[in-house]
Amino acid sequence: MIYIRAMMQPIKEILVLLFLAIFSKATGLKYAYSRGSGVPSDGASYCLSWRLGVEANNVRAWRTVPTQCLRYVENYMIGGQYDRDVELIVEQILSYVSDIVVSSGGLDAWILDVDDTCISNVFYYRGKRFGCDPYDPAGFKSWALKGGCPAIPAVLGLYRQLVDRGFRVILLTGRDEETFGQVTRDNLHNQGFTGYERLIMRSAGDHGKNAVSFKSEIRKQLMEEGYRIWGNVGDQWSDLLGDCIGNRTFKLPNPMYFVP
View (cartoon, rainbow, N blue to C red):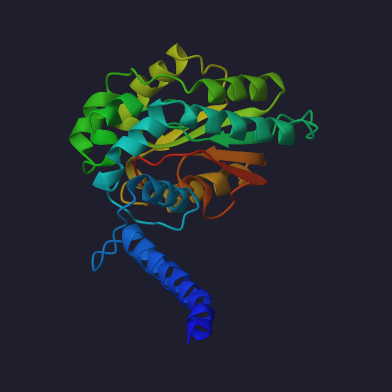
């Protein structure tokens, strides 16, 4: 009898360990996701995954940043990681540019978006809880009309190198020409964006078009004029999708808002 008990003891221990492993796995799943809500309780991990989904264009048509991600997005935008990410992307662009031989015809072009590509609205969005508040057209208009958007340093450096290498840089923005034309030109000039080929904005006939349609039409017109679009840079997927997108596209990070 004593022998049998001795033999059973290791088996009991194995069964206990197996039960603990299964229980731990089950409770781990409950910890990662709140039952019934579908909202992860591990906030930082969820917000990192959410931002990745946004940047990969897997999360679409979102209206606001999830409220539980306010601090995460704030830290990302002003804590240094955003700047490092933009710098890495610019390094990749310059590596690509170094292999391009610019022709003498003056038609080798790059297209750059303006808002949160060349100049930053992060100070405005800080007052809008970094995108947790719904889009406020009147509030953004008031901000933009001040003409105080700072340059994004890495992109300004990229811009200057493109101009110095002989590319025609075309700035293409969804801003309205009648409302924001002069203040946008002044803002860009004051931040060091001088010597570009054109600044193209929405005219009265472009009202009502979504960004993909508007920018596709402009790019098509440019190519019909003979421009070769070597690269296209923007912070929104709607800057980069559609027709005549160019030889390569480069997406800058922006987890604060979505433009369809």
